[in-house]
Length: 396
Image (cartoon, rainbow, N blue to C red; front, side, top):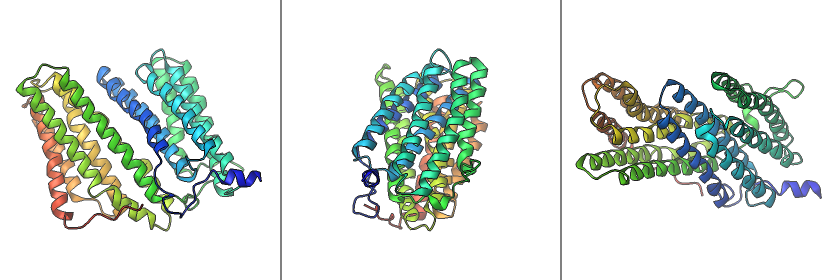
């Protein structure tokens, strides 16, 4: 009887609607969109090499937390009460984690680390328990993952007790351990290692999870530009910056959704080893996509505040870097799911690199317009190349 009860916590694979993202998963994402907002504000407020390194580390941590949970809900059914309770607890801890981001390298380091470790280890231990009767291979997988996350957790907590650069070093070690886990198959002496063949995932669910998260993050970027615009006196310049930032966000939306996620869902759903492709296309390739959205939101704030500055390499790096990271992520994502890197994205990255030579000669707002124009050019190029091909059908 106990085995039957636990087995009911899993999604009914293959049944109609079994891969559909639930409302609770979307509700869960709201906490992490708050994290993205906090990260962009933290980077803007502490914009320096050290501040950028700290923001990058926290971005990697937040993404790793979110994507691991997305993998878990690929197997576990959020409509089942135990799974629902687990996600709600994760939301509460995620709210604590998100709230502590601005002071994660200050007075709230231990709070950030404690919430993170509880979320990572707690979720993995719960999943190992949930699948123990239904899938021995996945039970071993999540047991190994729990051990790796617990080892990394020692460095997270130690970093929370340390200060300044020592905290950064401890957390870099913790994050390196976590990111090395999948590449090593989460090898544990006596328990062996995982194989991507063991990770039988629903490509439609993974694609929809990531797509909905990205569109919510793009929505947050729209809110940032709208809020900043509303707080400033109206002028032709603020209006121009608003239109530029909106055009850039729309171009990002188009590049990801027009020829990206649906084709990826179709491809992965028919892949012999979906776990391998899911790890490449969703777990890793989405990191620069997310980072590009965060950096672009910071760029918008800087352009509104300093439209006429010339030659500021720091602000220029954010303006060009946001678009560049987003294009690089999409290049990786589409290349992993189609087997062919889109030439339009490569050309866009080259154009952004060439724009760096104009930094000493043009004002910040002009550089923002040019960066947005590069995204629009990539959109037009890709549409001209692939526009006649209908997107792959949505697998619902």
